[in-house]
Image (cartoon, rainbow, N blue to C red; front, side):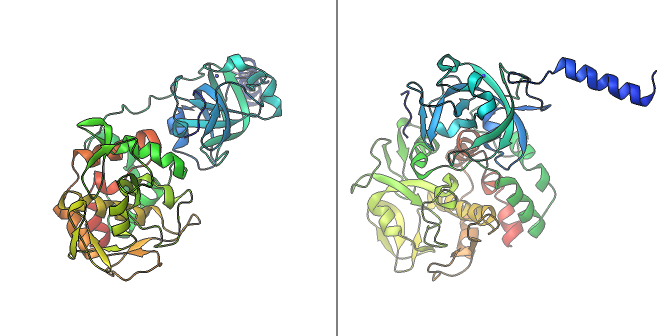
Length: 393
């Protein structure tokens, strides 16, 4: 990440009186109050990048100049500000990039107003990508201060399956089964903040942190605890494993399925290479540096402790990417000869692994961290593993 750190009358008369009262209470102008009835937190705005109009409150962190670059000094323009829920935020994935159009620059541009940094700002505009990053564009109102107090962001602790948090998230899927459940889940989880491939490094250091050693991450197939800082391309470094192999659909590492942290995990470079783009199945020879893993010419078997994790990541990708947002329609099948098709097997084995290895505390924490800190969406099969059989039988 490259961040330099490094606000009783006749009806006609009654309507006129109401309009006049509103105009007095909320005058328009460059410093006018945001008009939306509900004010979102930055986290909520990042999870709702769907073109809706919304009002968002956050602390000014600096001037965004690229997807992962926010200046906190030496400002070069008045055209954009980055805001966050915490005044001391340093992670760009948790910042909202707000466009500052000409009408607002004299008051909210950081080149002209460098003392604005650290102050709370409320802005109303369109929730859509800016600098290829979660953003708010074309503001119609901006004001200093918090406006209406936003709802608090989730407490950063894992929420057990069945608690009010996940249940509320899946409200529109309640009571559904089969194709109706699949459609409902897709509509829920497709609302997400999209990360760059560079941001994935930072995300994995958080989501896959070793609970026994916060300086380390746990490698998916190897099970080894390794320093967070030993990421890279060397023989004993760890890198970013695409559990849904990126060649199965050809999405590569472009922002989208190629950077979706729900299926990206840290893994030893050589073990990652051994898995390659193989489908998942049982059997084969042992994998060096990955006890309990096996591989042959066309398949890879993960160790028992993460078989269910692998299955649920694959099933998440199938529900999230249905071919309606410019990316391939991903779908598991019962083949291990899928080549570059947007398919991944073996489905019967994945469903068995999902039953055999239910979500543990590590996997549940990971799902929660992705939801609250990185992408704003969840893996429904971690919260409800029984939904896999409901959809795929």
